[in-house]
Length: 254
View 1 (cartoon, one colour):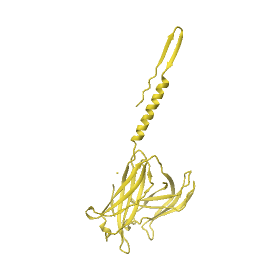
View 2 (tube, helix red, strand yellow):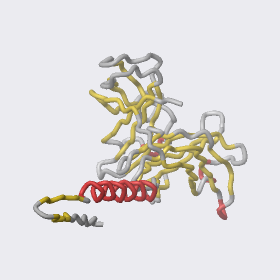
View 3 (cartoon, helix red, strand yellow):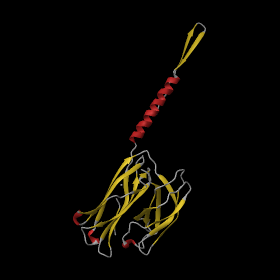
View 4 (cartoon, one colour):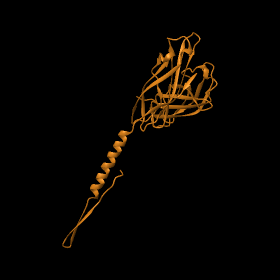
């Protein structure tokens, strides 16, 4: 398997004017006007800072590989861990992976790649993982590289994150790895489209790949259900390397 890692102070002036006419004193204060001006300046500053804040998505690490099945079909695999290094949440849009062969030629693409979660908060990470069949090659060794294009926008949305417990990663009979556990909804709203992704890591905490999936039931507040992740099929070359997994779960919404 080939690996590579890609990502006014505000001053307030107040004055009091005392006017004497005979023994009568009148006091006029402009403090109220100054407080209003200060509030306007602070609101303007906050608006400017908010407008200047942007999301920024970096590919923290990525892996790719290829495999050949029992009837000689070749499949390419791609996985990435992405991070929002900006100041605002990022909504992930279209994602396309380019599969490269010799001389950096494109021998296939992977589209419809989904991010888990699809809104990434500042400083947080998300996972991408997908596979595709390659019709233009006859050997897994023909896959020499992979790159990704990620569309994203700044947003004010936040993802509806869920909790996972009792997570285990094991080798399986028909898959290099399977990740199981329990997903729970700690929110006040029902989670009706639960999606999960498991980042896989080796003994040196190096990113290896991603398994993703969903559950078929809705979760009421405090509801929980079991999950099993075994897709996409990871090349057998990494079998025996995974010792750690990190699962992210959220409720997808339009």
